[in-house]
Image (cartoon, one colour):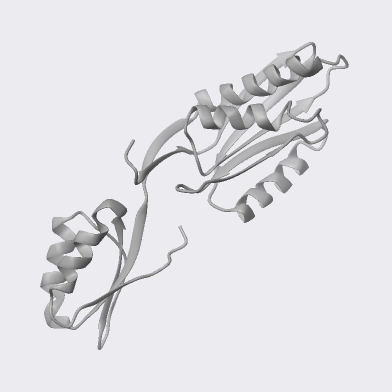
Length: 204
């Protein structure tokens, strides 16, 4: 995998593990922010309100990923960490995995819990559709109308994604560029007279 690529999942996936009448339901979700994770956890607590434990782990970001694990009342290190271990084993990011437990009346012990949460999470991730995505930079190009053909040619030749455009007295186009070619693209636009290209932040 290249430096400007990462792996994540498309859509939700589910897994299940049973041990001594305890049921572990695992759910994996693609996520893009801590706020989205917070809302998802609130919704799952309402949906699975009768479960004994709602344990989870998540990984966010690319170069310096942010992660968190939560055992939700299970013995420390027996739930969130095994779940997170499965995320790491598949090299995934921008993902939340939640495992809810319905207690069956028999304690599983530390090793039994670790295995249960690990296996349930693995089942959900094994069923997930995993995709590679590129890390992109975003730019706004400002130019006069006569430069339109030059701008459009560079966009087309490099398969650049166009996010937005405004054609008024001054034309503006917002583009998404794969990070490894960003510098080359900036230089190409800089060579065109009266063209200004600047980085912008896009929430995606």
